[in-house]
Image (cartoon, rainbow, N blue to C red; front, side, top):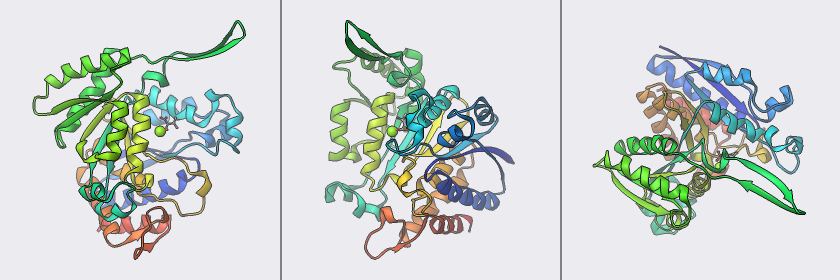
Amino acid sequence: MEYKIGVIRGDGIGPEIVNEAVKVLDAVSSKFGFDLKYTDIDMGGCSIDKYGVPLTEEAVEAAKASDAVLMGSIGGDAKTSPWYKLEPSKRPEAGLLAIRKKLNLFANLRPSVLYPELKKACPLAEETADRGFDMIIVRELTGGLYFGERYTKTSKGLETAVDTLSYNEFEIRRAAIKAFEIAMKRDKKVTLVDKANVLDSSRLWRRITEKVAAGYPDVKYETMLVDNCAMQIVRDPAQFDVVLTENMFGDILSDEAAMITGSIGMLPSASLNDTKFGLYEPSGGSAPDIAGQNIANPIATILSSGMMLRYSLDQDKAADAINEAVKQVLKEGFRTGDIMSEGCSRVNTDEMGDLIADRAGK
Ligand code: IPM
Ligand code: MG
């Protein structure tokens, strides 16, 4: 079996962390007997430098021709990088938003798990960290405020900016179905997070999701207002299994959920459409301040490659091997700087990749 993998190394720490994920993928593919054929795809700042735009048509076509895309990160330092002197639609982030839209990647899965070995890095109260948590945010990714009509106008000397938050029932239903399907394979609970006490779009999310929920009688379904959810994530994250929410709320809550695991460098993500195709990337950003120093944590990218094997390639055993290898290496006490604690051995980006590749390929 051979799969075509598009590889977006991107900017900042992206190339370094992707290299480690490729190392691990090579180890498991030879162990489990399948081949991965990689094609490099430019996106973000590196694409601006080469072609003047953050995403070319060729890049989109190359992604479409792949079974899945593995991505590092895009973007630079907004204060110093020349990319941020360009108009917003030409900046690195615009490439990411465009590829999400063009590939119809409407469901963004962001798991947030506290590894017992990393409890000390968890900023929550000790008894909360002791209880642990394992939740996944299903964030709608191609609608809402990110893609609604947007303009700035001046009328009678007063400048006004408008962003539009709009959802139709089709967009809500397909995201909700993904959330319930995922819940069926986990702890069978879905929490719809919205602002239904204020927003019409949230009230539509509630009506549609309630209908979808009726088709999954085994799944416990509840709703929660987003401000309360932001509070509950730091008070008692163990109450959540699958959190379903719209694009903007999901952007914010997923960073919060990432932070409480101790390091954003641990969290993978998957962006899926209605086929097997997906784009897989770490939840964290391009960290330009530490780029090129071989100190970034590659685990989120390595776990993203595991999600890719599971969701796009149906190579569940190889995906399990990656997850187990990560746990094993943490148990053995190896840490990159961001998750370092007393008594552990500090390793660099490439050493962490070597260790995980070794344990996963055995
Ligand atoms: C994310 C990022 C992006 C988003 C940015 C870079 C446009 O924050 O993937 O969460 O807001 O979706
Ligand atoms: Mg974000």
